[in-house]
Amino acid sequence: MANIAVFPGSFDPITLGHVNVVKRAAPLFDKIIVAIGNNTTKKYYFTFEQRKQWIDEIFREYPNVETTAYQGLTVNFTKSVGAKYLLRGIRNAADFDYEKTIAQLNKAMDPELETICIISDPELSHISSTIVREILINGGDVSKFVPEQIEVIKLG
Image 1 (cartoon, rainbow, N blue to C red):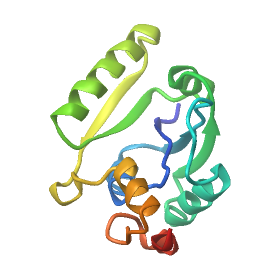
Image 2: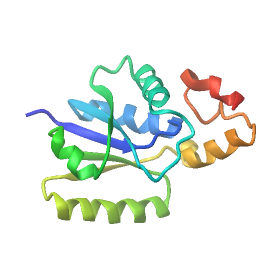
Image 3: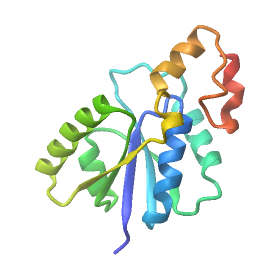
Image 4: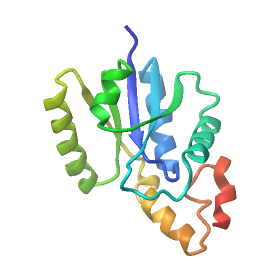
């Protein structure tokens, strides 16, 4: 049986922090599924197609990384793809508290599911998609926070 991890998120946009987590986790798993969630109550800045295209391009040299979309509970998605691991990034204590709660709830729903947290590298711990979007909305340059493959978005 393959060691499959799901890295869920909106990736609106994907940041250097997200990329760092996946690259560091890639040697640990047979497959990592970067799962772009679709929350019907959320308004996205970038289309799903654009986010998927960027993620596919960023990880094209990683044969064990694939990208897909999902709706509904992440725990249900992990079951549907045969994943036993959830991959999460931790930037700070607030992230840890949030991720701990979600991991415990997921574990209660699926006792077989393990959450693996990767602590961000210090130089990336200040980056979040929310802040990057805010910078973009206000016409700022986000090239220091996103992979070079999506540098075009610095124009907002």
